[in-house]
Length: 127
Image (cartoon, rainbow, N blue to C red; front, side, top):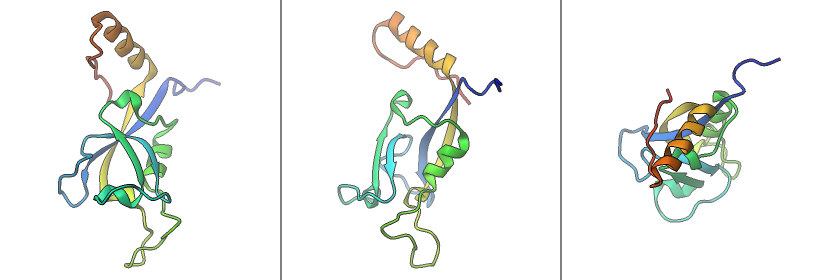
């Protein structure tokens, strides 16, 4: 039975660090994330595997808002408990937005870009 939700996807956008500080991935969308896999480099984002993009169309797509939040709340299996006794969820150091996108809107963006021919994102009409 159709629920009307079958045309929706969800993407996860990193707004800013929960501390209020700026980071190099503010405003980026999550492409790939694994809390238990080591990251690369020496920044705050290197504690775990995190790949981001500024292009929401390249972001990992989730079937539900809950699935996106579950990704954000992944516990690091290598080091599951923080010194304060709470679960070690590296990505929760960021404030996030789960954005709902209707597949029809994606089709409109692709059509608009095909018409413009310059590959620029023109339509941003999701909540």
